[in-house]
Image 1 (cartoon, rainbow, N blue to C red):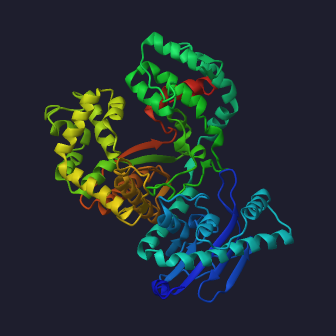
Image 2 (cartoon, rainbow, N blue to C red):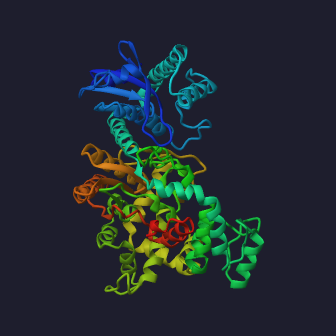
Image 3 (cartoon, one colour):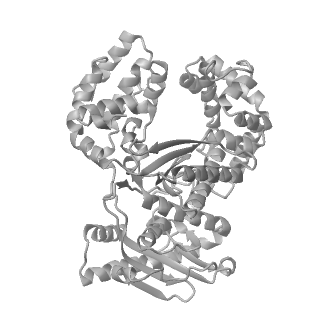
Length: 581
């Protein structure tokens, strides 16, 4: 270890390298199998089988204010510690997060697993096949022979030894204060994964069991207005004929075929409302993820939240196992338990508030603070009168929403025109009006992108880095500051909330789902919103990002208005009309 690295760690009284093996099946909380701890300075190894762990009332390594724990994907270790009833350490470095920071934006052919992090640095590691075999041994059994116990413990020990080598190799590049902040977030992740999302298990089981028959009836019922299905199979030719009869223009791919992806259908349905039921049917048939949800014995759905997994540092939960990855019509399966409530609290126009705060554009900040930045843009540019409202000028407001959001992503005039349902000429004019109205923002945005391209790197306020390569388009980089700093904001809010004891069930992009007993629900919702606002001020400096709250009290269920009709139709066909909303 270099002298510089030793200097960085001199502040810690002890440094413990920790790895756990555990079983986590069918949405239930983890069952710890063993733990290995290595003291970095002395090299002393301590090994604990599950019986030994259950006898302990605290973690078997120092956890004072000046002690440090190091792990790879630390939320997994913390999940085990919480299951054992232990407090979590004060200081944490998660080498997974630091590996992502160091390599984010680069091409890593083998991904970001522990073995991949070792391999990318040319460090010795066990074979993937061996690791897979040991995982299968751990997950596939609930008890193990003495020989198997030794094999599992040796495997866990090899991970700790690898962690030692990896830390020594990475340490000189670790930004310690920011690494500790990211490590602190992994504790919040462990709490959120442990809480899980409450599911109406009775309705869930019926929908999964009857979906095979329901999907046929559902398809026949909706397709009577379209005639594009053969049984449950979508027929391109029939759809092309339907479009011809209805005189609906449709985007085509470079090969000339009709584009049938979800995004195209979504955009087309906005312009041609007759398509909405067909779009919902296609989603229902193609994205029926309810059978994939892992629901534990306590009725909570749990899956890995995937912290630090995207280029912008946001979470990336397993798509088919995460309730908020379900189609909107399937989400009413989320329901608070008796005497409990849920609240979905999301930041309002988070990216625009961040853009205003980071750029210092006073007019953009004023537009955000006015309460509806899309309506404000339309007023600022003279498109609508100053006394216009969403009700009086909703159509123009919606067009401006596409423009304002699209420009954050570097969306061009053609795509913007298609999404907004306007001409390319009008889209071009609106882009120019936006540039003229918010010049400070545009100068800042261009400077950030140019600076990033010159340095081959972009970074958030707390050091989430993205390395740039020649294939990165400047327009695709414009949204990085908003997304990466939005992720920082979410991490700060999650840390504050979980440390105050608020039961956060999951982060959902720029929102949180929380749960609480009904008698304290309003209090927890109010406090969560306060914490989210405080987190926003840390990131923006002077722009408090508003929050919207949707409260669900038992016996109500989570509802997205866009999916109500389809949900009611499906549960009616499944024979559970009492589940209608």
